[in-house]
Amino acid sequence: MSKIEDSLVKFFDIEKQVREHINTHRYQKVLISNLDNWSQICSSLDTLGDTGTAILSYFSSEYPTETGLSYIYTYGLLQALFIQQDAMNHLSEAFDVSYELSEELKSIRAIRNASIGHPTKNRVKKVTYFNHISRISMSKGGFNLARFYDEGESEFIEVDFKLIVENQLDGINKAYRSIQQKLQEFDENHRAKFMGKPLVDIFHSTMGYMFEKVAQAIYSPSSSNVMFGLSMLESIESTYSEFQSALQERNELNDYTLYDLEEYFHGIKRVRSYLNRLDFIEFTESDARIYLYYLQNSHEDFVKIAREIDENYVAE
Image: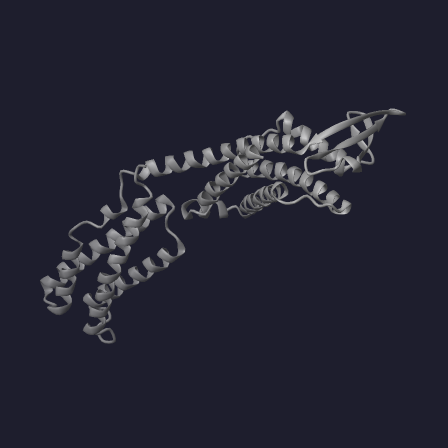
C-alpha cells in the first residue's frame, strides 16, 4: 500500500499545482476565452480528482463481506481506472500536451473491458471471448477472470488490484507531470518577460508634486497656475494610461481593476473640465476639490495593486 499512497500524494500535489495555474487571473482569462476548451479542462480535472479519491477510498476502506457490494467495489475500481485514463487523455488534449497510453495502461483497459465493460461478448483482435469474474476468488486484492473462446478453449487471468493500480498511477502521474511542467515553463517565461519592468516604477516619485500643482490650480486659479495644473493633470492621465497598458500586456487587468481605472479616468476628465472652465457653472470649486481628493487617495490603492502584482514577478 505504501507505493499507492505515495503515488496518490504526488497525484494530488500535481493536481493542486495545475489548479493554481488555471485559477491565476492572467492565465484563466485566456483559457476562458475558449469556453469549450475551458469546460474540458474543468471536467477533466474534476474527474481526475474524483477518481483519485475513489482509488484512495477503495484501499483505505474495509472491503464488504456482502457479495453484491463486493461486485460494486470491484466494478467501481475498474471503472474508476478506465475513466481516469480518459480524463488524462482529454486534459492533455486541452493543454496540447502529447499523451499516449503505455502498454501497462492499455492492459488495464483490456482487463476492465473483459471483466466489466463487455464481458459477455468481448471481441479482441478477431477473437471473441466470453468472460466472467470468479465469485469465489473476489477479494480486496482482486479476482480471477475466467475466459472461454474458440469452441471450448479457456484461460484464467489473475487480476491483482495492487499491481494494476500501481502501474496506473505511475502512468497517470507521468502524464500529469508533463502537463504541470509545461504550465510551469509557460509561467516562468511569462514572468521572466516582465521581471525587469516593475509596474510600481510607472508611478514615479513626482506624482505627489503633480497632485499639488493641480490642487494649486483649483485653489488659486491664475492663468499660469491653471495652465501648469492642466499639464500636470495630463501627465497623471498619461501615467495611468501607461499603467493600464502594462496591466493588459501582462494580462493582469481584471474586471475590478478595469472598473476602478475607468472611474479614475472619469475623475481626471471632470477636473480637467473644471480647469478649462467648460463646466464652471454646475461644477463648483468644491466639486473639483472632492474629485481631486478622490484621485489622490485612489492613487495609493493603485500603487498597492502594482506592488502586489510585482511580487509575482520576482525571481524565485
